[in-house]
Image (tube, rainbow, N blue to C red; front, side):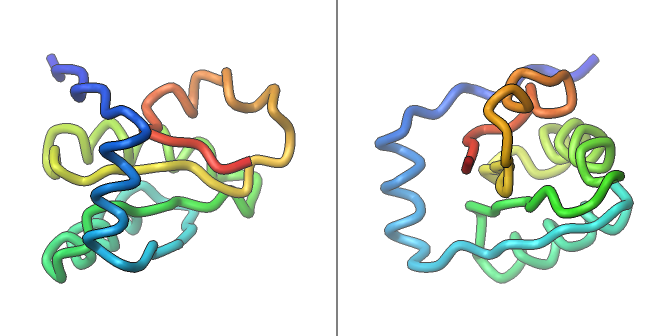
Length: 102
């Protein structure tokens, strides 16, 4: 059973991003590939990351990747971006995101 990530407020996410000084963006269609990207970014000290929704398989990959990241990389702040329709914000695939870029 996975434990939910603690909810970070907007101020904390912005503060972490400010310390990091850049926001890496990426997309993929495989949760396995996404976890590898997150591990590499985490290893480089980049822990606030945006996953972009740019393909029909992206949201499914995001949901699986976010669930794994919560366990394997709990200090990574994973957001979802390129959300073109605010109704997508409430889809089950995006419930594990820590921030949203519309």
